Amino acid sequence: MTIIAEWAVALLTFFVSLIFFVQTFSFPVINADPGGLALFPRVFSIFTGSGALLLMISLFKNNGGFSFVLDSLSKLNVVWKKDALDEESILIRNTAYAFLLCLIYPALIITIGFLPSTIIFIFLIMRVLGSKMLNSTLFSVALGGGLYYIFAIVVGVYLPTGKLWEYFLN
Image (cartoon, rainbow, N blue to C red; front, side, top):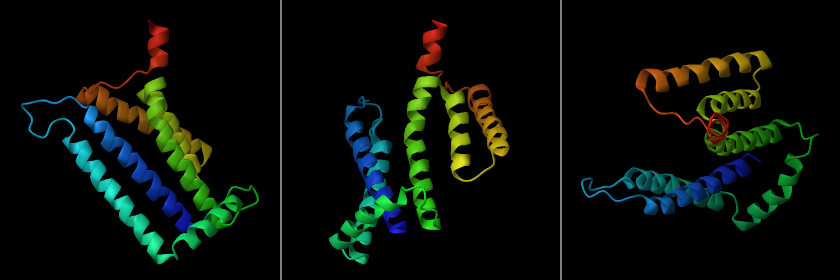
């Protein structure tokens, strides 16, 4: 079952890298910068996409090809049942939850702003990892507030306030 998680991460990483790569072609071109604004995101997406592709090829070759993929997909249904409490099922579920939270986090930043979304994200990740409620609450508030202070106050970086707050403030 751990191999299923590796497949999921490899596939998602590959497709996210592909989306990022395609999006870089919409970046503005600056003549003064030979690489342009898109250079780093393109190179990064090429490296992450290539790594994900190599992982998929390796998993495919080392685990029996298509028959393994079909067997794994049929077993995947068992992982999501509530009574599946074996260590591997819990690991796969927690990996999926953490990955899903990482996908939701940017949307939260745009919607409710950096500080509240960061506190919520850290809290939920800590809960997925098995931390107690009080520890998760205190740590997420302290780390979220600390990150906000460092970036917004000390460094002077603009952090998004979120469309929800902008709607109520205007």
